[in-house]
Image (tube, rainbow, N blue to C red; front, side, top):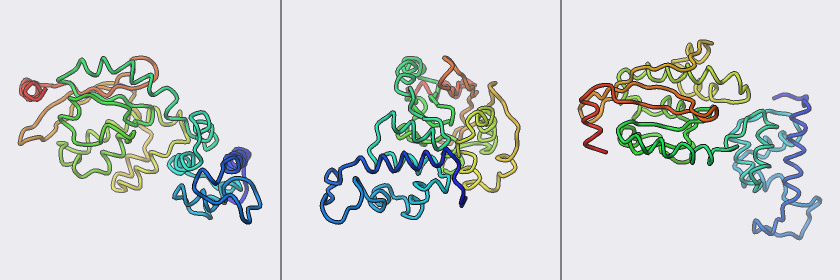
Amino acid sequence: MSTAADPRRRELGAFLRASRERLDPADFGLPATGRRRTPGLRREEVAAASGVGLAWYTWLEQGRVRTSREVLQALAGALRMGRDERRHLLALGGFVSDDADDDGVVERLRPMLDSWPLTPALVLNHRFDVLAGNDAYATVWPEPELSGRPNLLLAFAGSERLQDLLVPEERFLYELFLRFRARADRFPGDDVVDRLQELRPDLAHWWSCRAVREFGGWPVTVAVDGRRLRFECSLLQPDGSALLLVQAPADAETRLWMQHRA
């Protein structure tokens, strides 16, 4: 824990406190009367509503610690922040907002996704969070669920079910990570690499390397229904914002298997 607060941490703490104090306890089913020395919710009430420890939340308000994106998102929900407030909170924490124009991006790219009945495809943001996918993707891949903004890298690193599908498992994950790393240093507040190190310490040599790969294709083989389906993966950036992960069938057997399930 850091004892000296830098200016941005102090501002984050002040913003959290202001957001807490503007809330009406009655909206949360809490008594508005009694010994409330300050307006709004108490710190312990925010901590309980968000699932964040009281001591940690107190340190955040005091500007004494940094925290993760997930904690800030939980606090934004507990404090009933709107879209602009949520984005500001994430920015103060050193994170790029995920939802700046995600709905618009998905709306623009949805016709393209749906025009590929034989080609699994995902829309990703710069963190490789999944914004949308097509039916072909769900046909091949049981995870991650195409809702709730799961992170694709963390899903593949943490799911034994996905790892069992890949032949070999590590090649796909490594190629995906190289393309993530090419963007990660532009958003230094993101914590995906830290999470990867926790999930797969056996691959620490990957997570600490500085190798990158912007685009380019790579093969992936998936074991499904006793068959080995072969795809050629490509990461595309069609409009300068979101990314498209496209997995085109690489042989006739794979195309036929996809056709039968389209």
